[in-house]
Image (cartoon, rainbow, N blue to C red):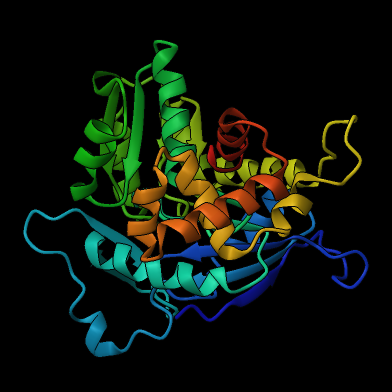
Length: 321
């Protein structure tokens, strides 16, 4: 299980007065990710208590030896605590992520940041979840929609089809090249391969600000760092949770209403917003139809949703990042 390593933002206040928002940063490797998380918190520029959860925390050496992807399987690359890289199966990682999310669901967390930019959507146990894949994909599509040819630098060759073909609306406007984070020669080669592109994106949060500067100098093009995109999403999410509700209402921020929900009510809220009927939710969660009805009614009341449109609009605002 994740170990819940705590990292403080450099702008963090003492949690006693007032309470800082608690942010669960879910990384693929082992925590603490001192190469990523402290800088991410600094870039976000908001007081927070960051709790790190690593997919590979507590995984023994024998298991580490068995999680490599099979032939032709999409792979993920991450970093162990000793600084070495490990490549693992996306299927194994997705299953493991469910365990991490179950652990987080039992903790009072305001925001979850799912750091992988390739894993699909998973249940959201917190009041707001940032899916980093959506953050990066949205940026790619914004550039492509503007008629710009986008070059993306990926960590592994096997990720290309998933990112370019499956995650973008205009694959003809996107080109990919490969360079593992930390490999300067490979990064230079990747930048040269993408010379025809108008804008470049370093797709993994593991790429550093220094690598972005080197890529920009070599290419002479704008270079976007995934880490900065995620930091901006964190800042926006925390601001949204802290913002007061409609001035015509009397109770506090959206986060206060969300805080009143039980884990099950929160889970059902996201499933309802995803278009599932009560019977489908009951089957998925292994509970009775009547139990779903009760939880759903309580959730609608606590959140003051008058219509399904209210529910969907709110959930979209929480998980759109």
